[in-house]
Length: 492
Image (cartoon, rainbow, N blue to C red):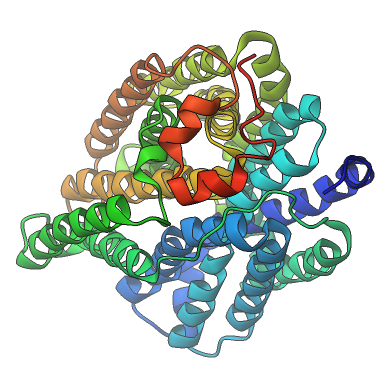
């Protein structure tokens, strides 16, 4: 693309950003809107409690599989093209879920929605390709904040939507937003100027899908199957075998789906470690704090509030997450990604400590949620910027996709372990306060580990240079990008 074409494309970056923000917000809402109303969906579709949990699990499984695949295809075929594909999948999946007459149809719709998980890494890649350099950190910070805050906002909106309409509108509303975003993306978002050569390794994609399913299914079902059951242990053993084969295939491939050399870049693996640990805490809070708040005081804890009221108590987390995520971009430019990530990770420890020692009054929970939102907002946006800065432009999509994927894996594990701790304490069918307290203690330890992991992140803020690129990209790709801007980036 000529310089005048690049300049013309970048004048549209504000319109492009509006499209990306709408797409990411709708995707984030679909993550969590169903969590507080699973019992309502269970009754509406005449299914069992165990089966209805797959409305969430099927979505997370599908997103875990397709997020890095769509990110990689975006790097190869064009990010704007795959963004439209992801938005179409989200729209069709939402329509199918809204119209679903039975639980099998609902689950098919949720699996299709999971294909749209690629919108987040694609958004990061498009911002890096299209936006003026000085606008990139701030834009990435806002998109990362929307992705995180939108998931929390879904918990708040679910109750009012179901109360005023019905649970079908949990899918109709995102479907309408996504349909508009899909048309706008086709019209507004310019073609990708950076492409990674090669083709998708379907063998690697199959192995990646296999070990993710083998891991997330037993982790999700362990609270009901039992962590020591043959099914859980067998599937976890299968996970190890398939993951080892996947790494072997990726290492030997000239065009890997996930480049193992890229995954070893210090900025990448340290940010992924923090993402995993943060995912443990965030998803566990989303899954279990509303249940804690809605429990009757006769259980020895909780406040007996409604779904809507519990969502309002969690609202400060979403508000602060967006506010601090938006501020994270300028702070990253000023102080560096590591400093912002470390600050956010450190702040995030405090609310988990508060949940352990002070959860007898609603204002205590509100304070903890506000602090959690501040810490998560800073950290998530900083992580996204570190990943984007730490890899070659041709691998932005797949690297960002794996970071989001690893957070989802951590979240699935965190929610499953939290469930085992909380339900394991049950007496007379109800969890005890001690069970929740022990769960919050585990999340506190995880948050502290995330803060320690943030210390491992490289301090230097610079784009990928020639030597690092040679380690990160296969020779075939180097030959095709050597004359472009990828190798022209110099350390700042």
